[in-house]
Image (cartoon, rainbow, N blue to C red; front, side, top):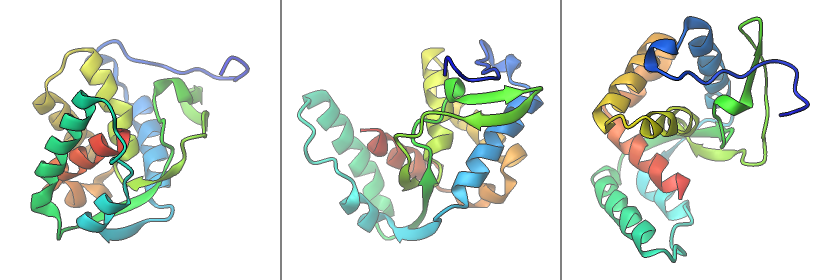
Length: 170
């Protein structure tokens, strides 16, 4: 990152998100979500996650709660794709408001199709003490405006994909 040419921009406030930044974020997510994309049954995907060796009791409790939330979706089909795995403001570099490159590739892998989207925005919102409802509203609006081809996939399954994201982060 120190050797990189270009700039990264982390907005301080929601009003600081601009069209260029949003389009660059969407471009990255769009490219990844089209790579190695496939459908998988939720129950089968949960079996593939390595969440059984969590030793911390709080983490274990959180994981159990999210697994319970997901049980209603066990027979549903979810989309997975290649993901960057650590997509955030600090790794997205632009020159003249255009995406120049993305750094920090050691966490690339196949995950739920919205992992990078959640990973990009959720920590930023949580750090600024936004509620789940505010985060959800923003992300759905972002998808509707910049990733419209994904809106029908996540509109009714946002809570499923968010819960899967939480499990994937662990």
